[in-house]
Image (cartoon, rainbow, N blue to C red; front, side, top):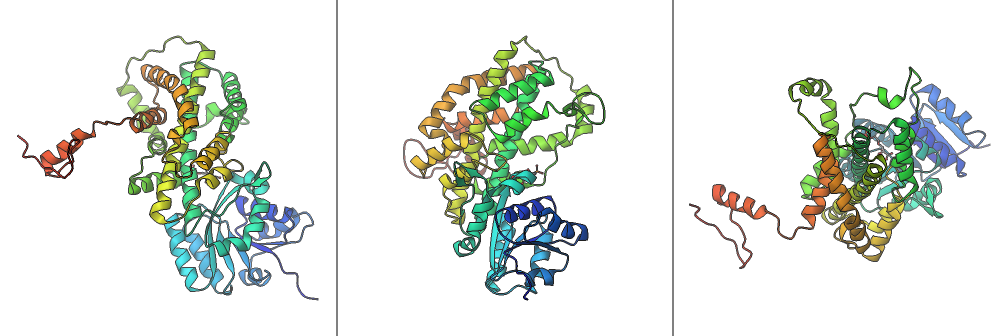
Length: 469
Ligand code: 6PG
């Protein structure tokens, strides 16, 4: 009798890899996992609960046990490990096989790997997977990039394992080359922005509104029942209910105010700068993680830079409503920035991104899933070349109706000395984008004054230089 051959292989049986692989098994495919850790490799068979599954620590056995053309996914830490695994696999795989990188790889690395593997006639997909451990297990949002031919080899499996919204799978072919990793990177940039906006809301509600953790829970739970409904608002509400297992009180009050980062938010900002596309709310979120890391400096500065601030007495219910409006306003600007960057990257890198499809597959499974994404999908369906989400008529209306509350909330925060870098930049982005006459004529004048860099005029064509007095 011949040995059983498996439909799908996974390299890396950490939380994400194991969960994704079990999800594949749940959908009727036979699976095999490879990990250097014996325990993890052995565990996968039991975890598959009777479904055809195997675990191994030996790469040769792993590759030989897969049906051809092989479908091998990697869920290992981004960076050098991905290259090391690919190079080891190259010893055993054959032309026509497919390698899928499911980690948060830097898109430049993906382009390099694609070129390298193309030479060897191995198909390669750079795939963004979002939704954390639970998403991987029960339905993530999946953003595949590479050749269409490679995608078609796994399309059915990815559609089966992905999250579903109204019966539609949260996966779609994103585009050529590193399109999948680029879309995932920007997803994470938006994720950073939304998380920072939620943190600033918390600060305002806690320190201006003096809301208790129970009241904070109620406020965010209420937001989540309305137009702000989203995964991040939902988990924020839940966080305020979590008791500390190691002591008295609530866990949130014991967590150090230093946020770490693996780099995808920073890459989004860096790349947006390279393309000249403004993403100020994402930049603000990355900056705030940086400031948060300066814990001891901040503590010392708290004494040196003590200033008098005023906290006006506020009506809690009114404040909760105002903050909810401001969050809605700022979430829209964050999505607008990320999507504008994607549209530009698509042109620059010839990805051929379909903005409606991106909004569609972000509606479920991923970290930034939100009720708003269906509205965003509709906006791009009506106008695929929309220059900016903010000028879609429905979104313009949403922004116009919440901008006054946003201004009011930021003023209160300024008076109270509460930093609102993300909210303030969201509002400034909106105000700058809708300003047909920015003061940057002065910047041009200065450039020409000190560097003869020339300028253009409003009243006639051409390039001008002045000998400034
Ligand atoms: C997701 C997340 C995930 C990311 C974490 C941590 O979509 O499931 O974006 O991919 O790794 O959010 O990111 P940071 O460590 O940079 O905060």
